[in-house]
Amino acid sequence: MRKSDLVSSSFWLTFSFLVAGESYRLGLGNFRGPGPGFLPFVASLVLGVLSLLLMAQAINRKGEEKEVQEAWSQRGNWEKIVYTLAALLLYLFLLEKLGFLFCTFLLVVFLLRVIETQRWPVVIVTAFLATLFCYILFQLWLKIQLPSGTLGIYP
Image 1 (cartoon, rainbow, N blue to C red):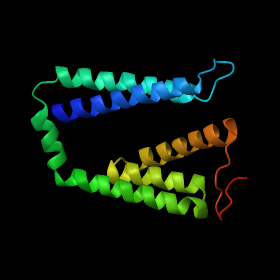
Image 2: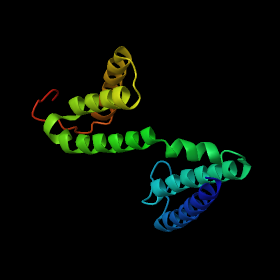
Image 3: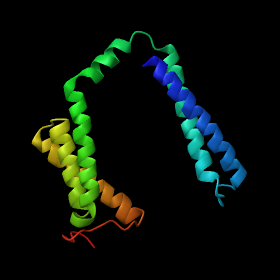
Image 4: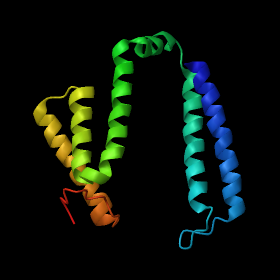
């Protein structure tokens, strides 16, 4: 894992430098009037810092190779990944038909109950709060139109 972390962090660090250079060429503007390169430039800075952190961790890490390999070789871990990807694809296809609130609630319930096996009270409360938070953030605060689906749960 150490070698792959070094390789991937080097790749993403190089990529962040390329994006930062092109973003600067587009024009950064300022905070009051950001130019077209402002957001990609900031994102490239974040990516570069995270790449450096991963590289530092990979250099300082010793003796964790076996634990990481054992975690990925267990059968249950791969099944969780496949189930999660299948649930996300199903979420994607049902979002327009059933609506954002209903699909998001069901996705969180599935992830917490099937993938992480939490107790039902924790699952229901967490799914409700996560869905409510997403609704407040996207629909009310950011004014983003979310699909209401055929159920028409919210305007």
